[in-house]
Amino acid sequence: MSIRPCCRSSRSSSSARGQALVLAFLLILFVLPLGLTLYKYVGASIRASVAESHQTAALGYANGVVMDYLRQFSQDPYSGHYDAASLARSDFFYENGFSTVTYIPDAVNHNLYLRAEGTFASGAGTARATRAIEAVIHFQSPLTRYGTMINGPFTISGSNVTYIGGMWINGALSVTGSNVKWNGGPLIVNGSVTGAAGATLNGTLYYSGAGIGGLTVNGSKYNFVPSTTWPTIDQNFYYANSTYVSTVTQTVVFNAAGTYSIAGGATYSIPASGAVLYCSGCNFTVSGLVAGRVTVVAAGASGSSTQGNIAVSGNLYYAGVSSMSATAANSFAALATNTIKFTQTSGNMDVAGTYFVQNGTTNMSVSGPSSKKFWLNGVRTQGMTVSGFGGGVTLSYDTGLLAYPPPGLPETPMLVNYRVR
Image (cartoon, rainbow, N blue to C red; front, top):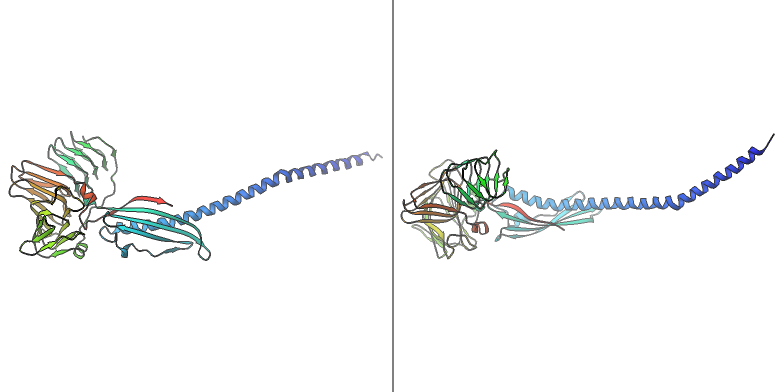
């Protein structure tokens, strides 16, 4: 018998062991460092992911504060925008963190400055991440934003009519007159535009209907309508925040000296913060030169035609050089639940300010001498029936009302600045 195969097996085993040692050396030399590197990378990625989740949570806590303010202001357009009682917030605690806020109200410019901080914490309140949001909320009244507002369908039957400033129609718009123009804008129509042969819009159009008829748009055109809520008169707010209250019909004359006089009664000064004159279940007749910031409100019972009426008898505009445009010193608004009537017995008629009627769509009227002119520079919120004034009727938008609104108007919040720190 031969013993050679046994010797060959021994040599083969030695070679295999050598190869295994080389492979092990290669694993130690290359694979182990790679594994350690991969382990460190995975660990760093996990830590970064956890840190990012903490940052995201902290930012969410801060953002929740800003959204809470916007929710509050959207629910109440009249009050709580600048006073500490409504703006104060205690620290709000979450399961793994909390939020804090500091604020600066600016009632003069209708702004609210916010700095909201969100902190993610764990254990005994140890901070893991903090993020801050600096935001500016600007308040603006829909009663100063558009030259014309109509709460329903509207028909423009007059010819050679030019609208200056924005127009908001909460319904379809029919244009049957010729040579109708809009200079500026936007024109917002919550429906379709029909007719409009030869009509021209030099501005932006928003509409929600199927078409725009023959309207020519020299600007952008969008087939949707921005959300807008038709304002209502909060009688409780005006009663509580008025500088003068009456329960009987009164005639009010504004004087260039910064006062107003009640016919057959006293004369009152207009406060620097503005005056709100409120007639509860009665009517106002107003005229004169407004020297100050004034809002006149006539509120009546629902369905009453004898209450909640305002008559503008004669000219009503501002004292000073720029007598037809609102300024930081002078602005005016007339708010009525039922009707507003403009009447003039002789001469042209000039009126300035915001004129709002809550109910209906055609509860404004204009009457005067047949050969004279009527000019309203401001905002009107109804269609107008015109008697007389054959010399022409001009309705123009006063941009000064946007910058210097009369006191006590309802306001809606707009987030105009949002910066993450």
